[in-house]
Image (cartoon, rainbow, N blue to C red; front, side, top):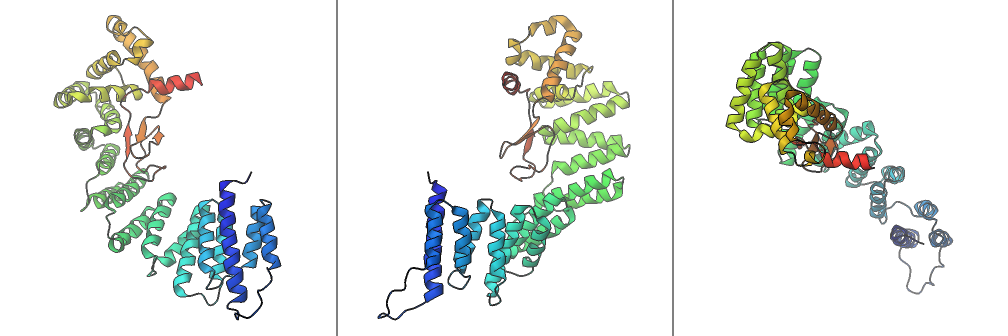
Length: 394
């Protein structure tokens, strides 16, 4: 049976054929002139539609109807329709045909170039899309839209310096703030520089990220990583503790590093003291400490083990599998066994989820790959037993 989309296309094609053929082929006729016979090309295209041969009908109508001043908007509408439906090859062909017209008005040429650039972007031909958007970003009426698309392309290509340049132009022309995005672009450059061992450049990029912009904890996290890599453990610990105090959700990133530093320096007593002070300031963080310890298999530290034990005792789903009271009676050995099992469960389920779209991942992604928003992921605070059970059932 014909589908809803078939009827939609049929209606559009009939309109295209009728308007384009009648206006383009005949123009105005004298009122005494006999009606023109129905065009055989139109009947052929209509026959394709009646036989649900949509592709053939499209090709036929595109050949039949000229691109002229009376039909150009119809061609733009068709190109947009095909791009939305994922038929980018057809959209590209339509917009290239429009651009090929020698008498095209400048406004229509810009519209066609912008539409073609979006076609290339949809098709994944980012180099071609970038070239056209770059051209349109230089004074055309699509300047703002072109810069918006360029920033998205540069994000995909991880060309962070170009993303910064485009974002700064967009702030001036578009009248909206991209401070958060640009701060993250600088942090991306800082992480790349630190990974290459250029710590001076990395520090400068972090400074640029936070200079005159809303402070993002990612900048502090990058600074802490740099300090840790350059053996400035005092600065690293200060930053990690500040990160946890100001943004508790980043404990999943900071706590393992804190434990690593204190352990390597054989200062477990100082670690215990610091963690106890943190929990006194914010008792609700006990479950976050416990989950982070479980997910990263951290054990053998008194205050952390106490948090894990309480966490397991308070977990209602766990009581369906084991005798949680045995954790208290069995001592550290029983706790270690259960914690290892819980670590395996935590490793089998996503640890982060985007607050905007729900996208889940095993590691922290500053840019959500689904909704393309920055800094929207948050860590889980409990082992997702329901997810594990669903996987085991299926």
